[in-house]
Every structure is written in C-alpha cells, then in structure tokens.
Length: 164
Image 1: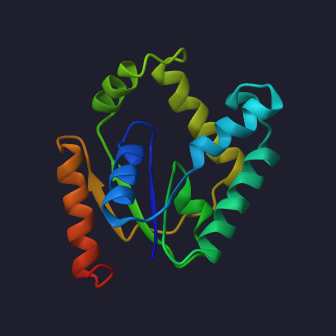
Image 2: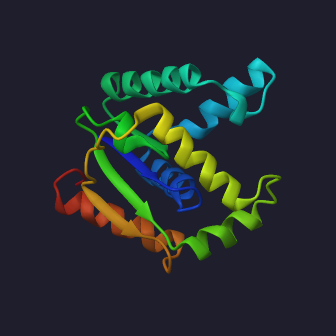
C-alpha cells in the first residue's frame, strides 16, 4: 500500500505522515526533506535548486513508490508526481488563515505569502498546466486535531479494504 499525502504548505502533511507511519509501522518518505538534504549538499537554499534537481527528486519518489510494497510519501505536488502510479492519493486542505498561523509557529525566515508564491511558481515551472490525478480522499484539516485526521484517514483506508 503506497499512501501519498499531499497538499499545500502547513496543511498537516508531515504530522499526518509521521503519525500514520508510526501507527501502521510503515516507512515514510518526506519529499521536502529530500529537497532540503539536496540543497544542503549543494550548499544552497532549497529555493535555489534548479528545476532539474526537483525533477530528479520527483523521479526518486516515483521509483520509491514503484519498488516498495508499503510506503507513505508526503509532499506538495504528489498529485502531479505520482499521477501515473497506483498509489492512494490523500489530499489535505486547510484554510489559508490557519495554514498561515501554523507557518508562523515554525519561526521560518521566509514570509508565508512568499512561500505560497514560491510553491505555486515551482509547481507551474515543473508541471505546467498538466492535470494531476484527482485525490482518492480529501480531508479538510482546518478544524481537526492531528489524531482526528489520522482516525479519518485510517477509517477510510479500512473501508476501502486497505487496512484490516
């Protein structure tokens, strides 16, 4: 079972992925961490990586989805990256004001609006107008606690026959 969790920044992807990984004893691939690691090795900020670097990370993600039996993958653009895969796509949505508040708690040096703009521009540069695969499940995390989101996803996976 490959569960791909995607959505905009601060929608809850990382927390959900880590919780599901722990509860289900399944490994997790954090695409954002792969970007940060590559940038650190190159001695640049993540925003300075070129599109080819991002596309290489996306190809590594597709390969991970192809060779693993059980894996959770989280990232912003997985609807595009894994459009041709058999993964289960879970989209997380969250109101902008709540995402902004979560972002401020991170003490990031980049402003939320700049991060949003950067993500939108990168997605357009990498994938243009190509449609992504529609999600199998969409969860609005605006008013949900982490455990409520985990329960909703696990319950859905059970009803679909993916979990016993």
